[in-house]
Length: 188
Image 1 (cartoon, rainbow, N blue to C red):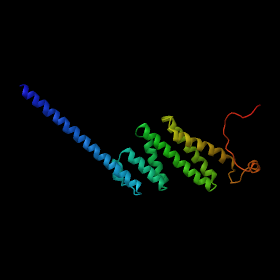
Image 2: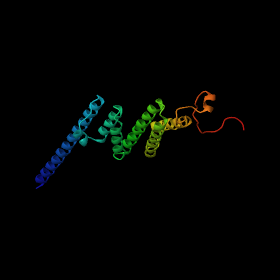
Image 3: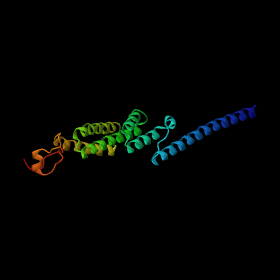
Image 4: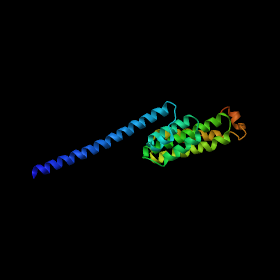
């Protein structure tokens, strides 16, 4: 009777071990597939929609970065929008940071073309994305830094008239300076 109980216990442990091993094997295969998909995206080749539906969120993030790099902005915005609502905090913060970077890069492209009217809303969208990332993770240094850059860029663009001319006050000073709030220097 005791041998029968020991044998049943040993067989049960073996079955549980086999099931756990199979589960770990499948998990490893999925990680290898995800790694291969990310390498494919890094090489400059898009992955198929069928692969994307089964892909983990990290692969979807890599694809969003790929789309942004290929100037497929609308698709990248959709991909980031999906990621912002999914996953753990770390992934959401990364997606928000990247989304803010996408908006800020597009804004700077418009600034270079002197299209201030088109750049202003993009800077605001970038600031919103960085602020959301900081609400999720207040210690995310990159979001803090880029938010500061976006905030300093906006006063500069407000000083430039909508038609691309610089205000007369600014011409007299010779250069545009960022208005940074802070404590005044010197004695009253």
